[in-house]
Image (cartoon, rainbow, N blue to C red; front, side, top):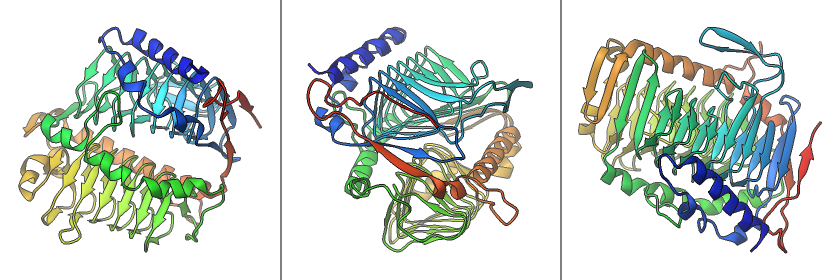
Length: 473
């Protein structure tokens, strides 16, 4: 038995202790999930930029294929092909506001991963826990393929494949596959697969539940092996393109882009693409035969194929857009899957909000009207009756609203205003409005990052582990 085997067993024990309630054993999901040879096959890499506070600490860990930016500490963990992106962490002296209280940070915030096993997971944003504003912890946690941990401290939990925990502190929870949770705080809970749950205290609650049989066709968690389904088939069929990108030596972007735009060195770019000003194409995104209008972005694990985005579009982490035409200011939420066909393109009107974890998969023409709220599973125009509503009409809701598998209660106006404000913030943070007066964001700063690689032990009892590293300014 190698030190890596000891480490994985240690993580399993730590997570299982936390998940005594609900009773859940992560061991079968983890032990044979990844071939041991892969842990020593891939390098890890980190970004250096003068715009982001720097500290990297890695000890007793495997970080194969993973990317780190900002202040990140990893101890006794396996982080396999993940993005731990700390470019939005809070900084010393910054004032963090929560429930009307103002908290001044006495130090830079740090992402701390300990006793955890993360696979192809995105970690981004900053902790929204006011009790520990300098500390973004992920501890005693297992997270499977293409999950998102977005501004969410996580302790003692299991995140299924393609799940998202967004701006929510969770303790001792099981989050099912393709579930999306944004509820502020959650403890000792089991969230069923395919649950889309957004709650803002007494303001509103949005809850949608996928039909289990439909969801299973798209993502099915299989104990002891990689997940299966349409989502996995889609990403696995393009896996070779990413291998080519990561096998090259780190360098600056391979293509000329307009002033103010950024195309990551670690993105796949194929075919004929058009990138306008202030566009952001993040690492591990996939771009093929697509036009991106001014200020549009494709975040980590996004796939944009044979599509057209008119401008100021937000495609959140994991969003996939295939054979589709999107008007201006369309928001496509986390891990959403929008797919038309070459003969029957999907059209989404301007100012639409496509909720996180929405599946639109059509083989006939479908056009979503401008200014619409869209959610759930849509496979034909008839599904729009129960999965789409004009945003102005939704804002009028004050009380209970049910439509198909969706239940909503509270203020529709506060719900819509909250989403609109968040989309505006994302555009600003990504540099969509950059001009001669400034307004710079990730798109402008991305070109200033230099990349450095680190390698694991390739033989002996330490095979697959990385040496202890401390990297500071």
